[in-house]
Image (cartoon, rainbow, N blue to C red; front, side, top):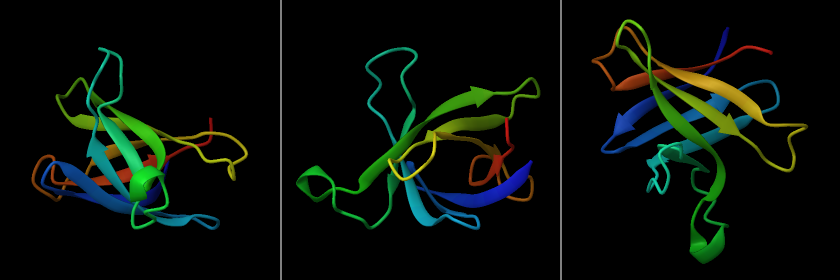
Length: 111
C-alpha cells in the first residue's frame, strides 16, 4: 500500500492532503449527520474551494469509521469527482507515532 496523504485531528474535523502524481488537493473531513445506520461518519471536502452551494467547500466523498481486530480505528474513504476516471477508494489508518486518533495516514492500493 502506498501512503498518498496525511491527516491531523483539529476539533471534530480531520485536515490533510492527498499528494500523488496527478492529485495535489487539501481536504477536510467533517462529521456527517447520520440519517441511516450505514451512512457515512464523515463528509470529505476540498478545503478552501468555497465554490459549492451557499459558498461551502466542494464535497468530494465520504468516510466510514471501522475498528480492526486489535481495536485500532481506521476510516474507509471513497472520493469521486467528474474529472476522475472512477471512484478512488482508500483507508485512513492511525499513525503509530502520534497519540491515538490524532494523526492518520491515507493509504491506497490498486484493487
